[in-house]
Amino acid sequence: MRAVLAVMLLALPGLAAAEVSDKMPSIPAVLLQGAIVGTVLFVLCRYRWWLVALGALTALLFVTGTVDLWQDLPLRQALLHEQGASYFLALSIADALVIFGTLAGACLGWMRQRQPGLPTRDELPSDPMKPRRSIFPWKRSL
Image 1 (cartoon, one colour):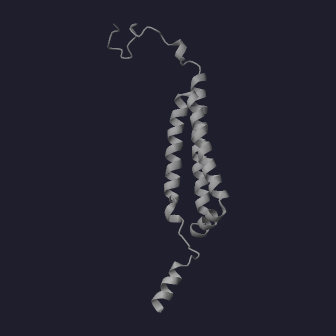
Image 2 (cartoon, rainbow, N blue to C red; image 1 turned 90 degrees about the vertical axis):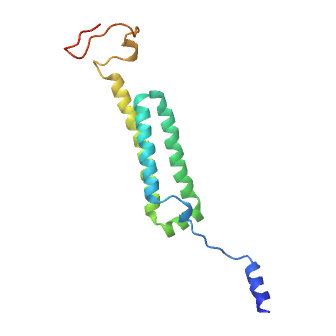
């Protein structure tokens, strides 16, 4: 009789409490991901102006993920209970790193293009075989 009662109790659906933190990246992993993606976007946006669109899209995806996680009420409550508000602070810092990397790279790339004295791509010589002056004083140019 006890075995039947135990099986019946196990068969009845009940409220299950699951840990959420083990399925989410840790705070250092979130910050490291934001720093790496921000650095890569900084380098890309600094050297190619049209990659700023890729950086803006990536930043938008990061922010959308954070907002989506905040809007999911049961998941938000579980994360706040298990990891505290510092988890959402880390997500916001990672978002800010990605946005800052994109904007800083775009600004420095724009300033590099506009810097006086440096030749732009259009001003470079079109003939690659044209002899150039050597930067070493002891070598003669061809």
